[in-house]
Amino acid sequence: MEDIKTIDLNDKNYPKLLKKIKNPPKILYYLGKLKAAAHMDEPRLWREESRFAIVGTRRFSPYGKRIALEIAGDLAEAGLTIVSGLAPGIDTFVHQATIERGKRTIAVLGTGLDEKIIYP
Image (tube, rainbow, N blue to C red):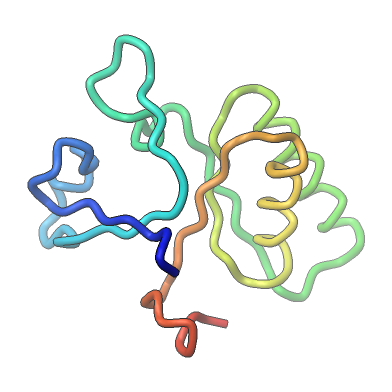
C-alpha cells in the first residue's frame, strides 16, 4: 500500500465541490495519477462532467453482466471516467470493461485502507 497518496482539505487538487459539503473528508486517499485537463483549474479526475457512476448488485444475471460490460465500455470509449465501488459483481465488471479499454476508472471504497478491513 506504499503507492497510496493523499490530498488534504487545503491541497489545490482537493475537489472544490467536495469542499462545499457540510463535513468534507479532511484527507482523501488515492492510488494512480491525477491528470490535469487542458484549460481547467482542477485535475480531470475531479470534474463532475467527465465522470459517470455505475453500481450494481453482487447477485447478477448473465444479462446484467453483459449490459454492465457493454455500457461501461461504451461510456469509457466516449471519454467518460467510470466510477464504481469495489464490490464483487457488477462493480467489478464495470472496472474490468474500463481497464480492458485502457481508460480511466475510479473505485470508491466504503471503508478504510487497511487490508484487513477492506470490504467486502
